[in-house]
Length: 418
Image 1 (cartoon, one colour):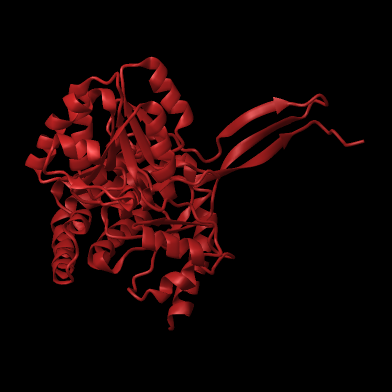
Image 2 (spheres, helix red, strand yellow; image 1 turned 135 degrees about the horizontal axis):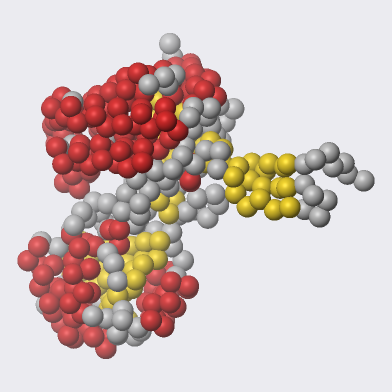
């Protein structure tokens, strides 16, 4: 079978499966998710062995340390995967929820009901741990899913998906509720993106190149974010010890993630007091700092920052630093260079905090917390299938509710229109 026919068959089977999944009750879905969590944990040794094949191939191919970090599966990450599935199982089932019922003057009631999206195409790179999250979220929200992972994680994904499919089928799910494109041929993605008669939405998760390629070639609506150029602004009214810990965590806790800080903005009134400590801490941790002229005057090891650097998502132990005149200049910088992903202010000023929340445009705007918290698990969604920076349908981490749509429902007693 050629690639185009193979992908078409996967999509057609997923569409048939979606009609079944959409009617399954919450108990059946939750039992399936709990079974999935159990088999991931009991099969951890096999998963780690399959993952080692991908890691070794990645090293041979010269993948960066940040990509290898995203690719790695270990016991804590497998436990976290299982925990995520159990958290999703514990959440209320969104399907069938009735919202905003209003009675019209003629006596009929008009409301909305949550319904599944249908078939979700999920195209992703590197991180095999998101395979379980995405499948679980899609099934709990009543959808079928077609998964297409990157070639760098092919062995890990095959192993994970085989376990998930077996667990789901044991609880009555159709075999094609979780579809997997198991070829590494890139043409499969291009063919998948043309199947708007079968797939209802595409969610890409990975580097900017992948997401732009998907968006430019898809006939299917795409929920996306291109990159995470995230900022922390240290306000004039900041608790500087708190600011130091937040900035350090936002950059170094996992620098290869989209919600890691890429630029640190510091109010000029606290720069001389704040920057020497945080810059030394960065240097001790191996972080390369690129800074403006005012930053370089405070630390000779700081490299000059170029304007183009402010647009970069480093996904590495590199950070930009700029001293700004105040909150106004900080927000102007974010508006020019931000990617609508995650922005944080560190401040003890209520007025500045509220202004930052109102005026900064991003999928998540935060006060006095690390940017690393823009995450479905941390927000109580159980897990996420991705973070959307688009403004239609879903924005921010996409959990269960974001994987549903609504339809109008009308309840009457024989009303007719005159």
